[in-house]
Amino acid sequence: MGVGEGSTAPVTISDVAQAAGVAPSTVSRAFSRPGRVSVKTSERIFQVARELGYRRDEVPRMSTSRTYHLVAACVADAMNPVFGAIVKGIFAGARKRGYMVVLIDSNESSEIESETTKRSLATVDGFIFAGSRMSDASLRHLAGIKPVITVNRKVPGVSSVTPAADEGLGDALTHLVAVDRSTVTYLAGPTASWQSGVRWRSLLDGARHNGKVTVHQVACPTPTIRGGIEAFDMWRVHPTSAVIAYNDLIAIGFMRRAMACGVRVPDDVAVIGFDDIPFSALISPALSTIRVNQFQMGMVAVNRLLDMVEKPSRHERQLPSEDVVGVSFMARESG
Image 1 (cartoon, rainbow, N blue to C red):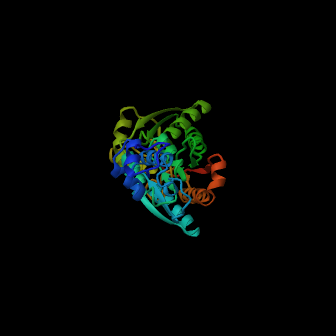
Image 2: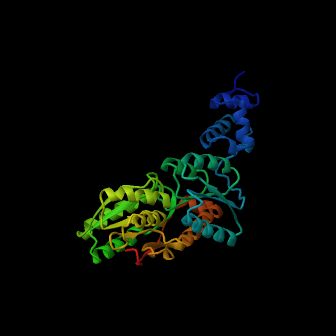
Image 3: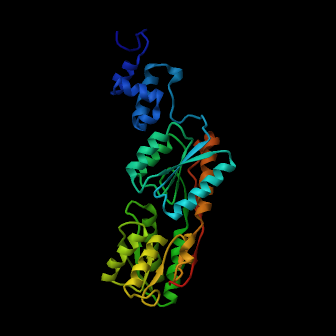
């Protein structure tokens, strides 16, 4: 007799597998090692199992209230000083509340990010994504299973912590106009970077509002010193009186190549970075930049996340939080 309303036979793994359209071994892994099965497949298996009455009391729900006192911090590039400062803030905040942190380096890859997230799903209380390269849909889906907060990115339906980039970039443009720089090139970040898009739109809006400066952008190969070196050669085809880089690393690479080619900074081109990483003030000329307290962003993010973990019922009734951390323009020698 098949499984149905009139059946008295116990529901088996094979019954669940057939109804869910997967192999029995997949059902077995979903129950015993959920991190080895994709989130979408696990949810389908558990839903079918509940509907069929298979071990009803033991069917897991991915949004379990069990606490492991462990959170995952996923960063786009662990070698980037910006992410290092964010992670330090996450570790400090988690430690104060009795939690540990596991670090995931996605190496700017959405595939690595997605795979490591799946493997961590069954053993952590929540996720903090700094510079995530996954799609909005993937992050929203994950946020429906475990608490999630994004840093340096906003995703509809997901809590976030972001810098007030528009304020800092507006001050940078005002400063450049005051020192007679009327053309600006934006050295953009990765195409998958939400922050890079935000910064470009902020510059466009600022230029329109100011009326005395024009901006255009150049795509950098990578958000690194090497990327800035290569961006200089593209900038040189259509030079402008100033550049604003997606981050300090690109700005430093640009200056390094410029000076090697006999282009003077700031006499021939003013250079402004973004983030104010520790050695920005130590290079020569000292880099003008937009300072972001990345450590504070990490602290805010982990505290928001742990509030979700420890008070899930309250979190479910509230709209996602959107914390914005202030920034400041630091005028130094480069522009």
